[in-house]
Image 1 (cartoon, rainbow, N blue to C red):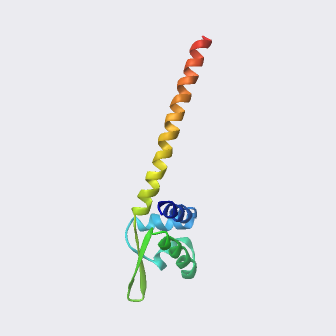
Image 2: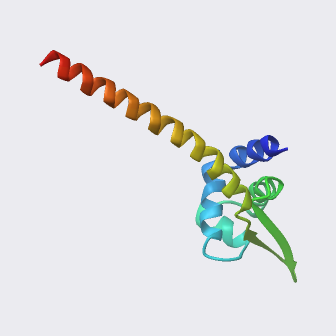
Image 3: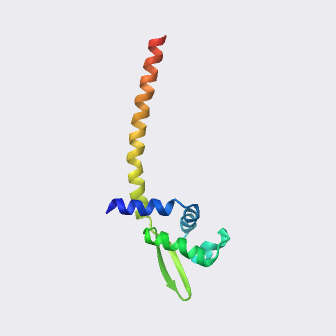
Length: 110
């Protein structure tokens, strides 16, 4: 289940347009039209990106009159960050070991 959520999150984040939309939503709730405007994108095009973000659980949509307002949901991003953090720790430890080996080789060469 967590793997599926991660797949959806990373698939949604793979597109720069959707990342831009998420960045805009960090400033607060926006309509789909407001999300489309700085991207010079049609409402229909923006709505497709919003649907991907919504299916990934990264945003919530609600109706306010004729507008559809979007709000950021950070929980899936926290899951992705936790998954990435384990790899950060792995690579940090690996690079630390490599650095120690290089220093050891340099000392022997002197």
